[in-house]
Image 1: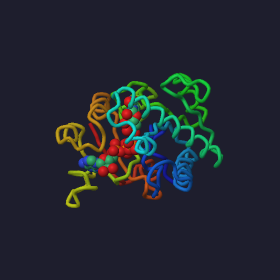
Image 2: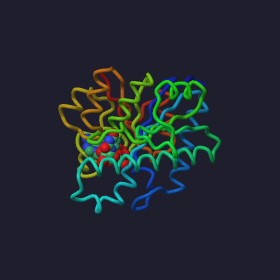
Image 3: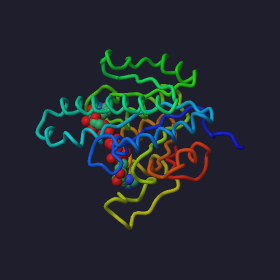
Image 4: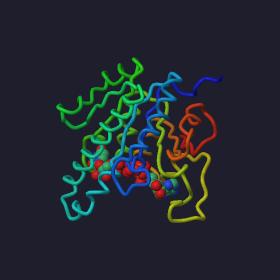
Amino acid sequence: MSAPAYKRILLKLSGEALMGDDAYGINRATITRIVSEVKEVVDLGVQVAVVIGGGNIFRGVAPAAEGMDRATADYMGMLATVMNAMALQDAMKNIGLNARVQSALSIEQVAEPYIRGKAIRYLEEGRVVIFGAGTGNPFFTTDTAAALRGMEINAEIVIKATKVDGVYTDDPKTNPEAMRYKTISFDEAITKNLKVMDATALTLCRDQKLPISVFSIFKQGALKKVIMGEDEGTMVLP
Ligand SMILES: Nc1ncnc2c1ncn2[C@@H]1O[C@H](COP(=O)(O)OP(=O)(O)OP(=O)(O)O)[C@@H](O)[C@H]1O
Ligand SMILES: O=c1ccn([C@@H]2O[C@H](COP(=O)(O)O)[C@@H](O)[C@H]2O)c(=O)[nH]1
């Protein structure tokens, strides 16, 4: 059997993907399936760090957040990602995966703080590290946190597991004519404002020459295919 194409990855998991077919929140069957796919690649010897989004929970409180001070709403969004991180850790434990949550916001009773060296040590020990609370700063996103943490832990690639199966010429959810790219350069994705990942994250990865793979978390087996270097989703390359 061929070897995985990467030794250490940063997996960005869409918060909204955890909803499954529910309106918001965490769908038990969906989270179990997602962590099983993560286990498959951990079992191949790949070191996996995860940044989780918060859309599934934050969407549920969005009406209450309307008209709120932006920074306050953003801190609420970051706390939503901590809840998702805890749920992921729990789901991983249930299938025999050893995972640690590190939070970018101080919340010691529930998660240890983000400490780069410790995160790297956990990865070397074969544990999954789940980064909660994004970057810890308002006005950012978990995509940017994924780029940042990916660089900090020397990941070879940022893998964005999202609701669509790659980067398209336009949003495929609203434009059925949109075509998927197999590969695209950072410059083109930024210039064309393709939105699948925010510009700050794209720019950080471009400057550090850290490739990004975008694939659909709803497609069973797709994560393993990306890890094995097979043709899946879209690669964003320097
Ligand atoms: N050019 C494009 N190619 C692909 N997807 C696009 C494009 N433009 C917009 N999108 C939309 O971007 C979405 C993915 O990005 P988004 O940041 O919203 O989700 P996420 O980070 O996966 O979720 P969450 O906020 O829950 O963590 C897709 O669901 C898709 O509809
Ligand atoms: O570094 C960060 C990361 C996130 N936020 C806030 O959290 C929500 C949820 O994150 P998603 O990336 O949309 O899943 C986001 O909308 C921000 O409000 C943040 O402020 N800083």
